[in-house]
Length: 384
Image (cartoon, rainbow, N blue to C red; front, side, top):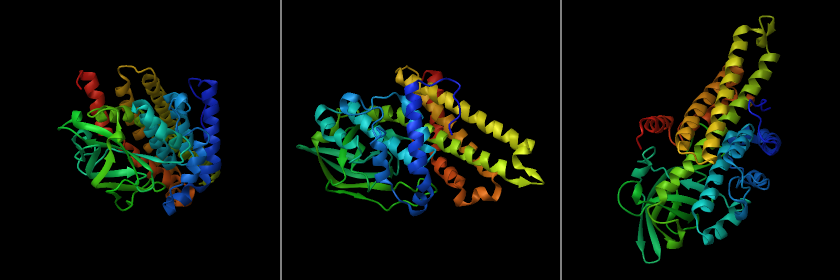
């Protein structure tokens, strides 16, 4: 269950939440452990989510999307993550790519890609990180040089969710000089000559989505693949990441809420020293702290969503605050839930250890939480 909210959601948003939660419990939760253990990428189930509008939540209605707010999206991703944080997180990435095409693409690009991405007939990934540039994204080295009507790409992208399975890669490349101003964005189909993929990484969590390198070796894409104008890619990337940070925070919330729900049920059933574990004051104090921490996280996330929806000048700082606080806090809550189950929490069949593993990476991706602190401090000091 999702708890009653301190600030009432609009009725339409509550209905969205119930739809997403029903889908999560019926379709994702029953098979989440199986997908994790088999390293299975559940594309068909995600297409079922897309049929409910969940693959283009904040793409404009005139472009075929749902035209929802960032708050709506956060509520949906939280609910989906109660079934499986990994699948919810991948859907957030696909949503981000679809939104970036809608927001920054031209009419031809929107007409080419969105009718396929909205229903997830085609699946999309986002490629920014490189082996030598993670948090320092402006230092990326993948080069795209212009030759007539084509760009020729050389370089490697690292830690790309969906790589090898996705059909389209929104990829940040260097078309100009050093620094952010030399970065551009290209829409690169999977079948592009000269594009190959590394081995599927073996990871701590997020096993229900593949993670591989993109390897460009003289890959050729037409100039029409350029999103927006040359040199605008870094700005696009940062705009996408603001929303991505809210989404990943929402996925952390959903995972932690599911872990708390499992622990709450367990401590009321489990007997120790002649009484239910829930009757011990220490257990009650821990449960109270966990509930409070989730509510505090939810409130900050919703405020950050409001800032981004309103295009407030300090929206970026609020997105960073929400991402930092929520992902750190929710990983702790999930770990506390595991502790309440004792040895059973460590067993895969109870589902909490998977949540702990899945949520750990949320403190790293979309900008590490150390980088979030830098963004917040710089906004306080009036520095960029």
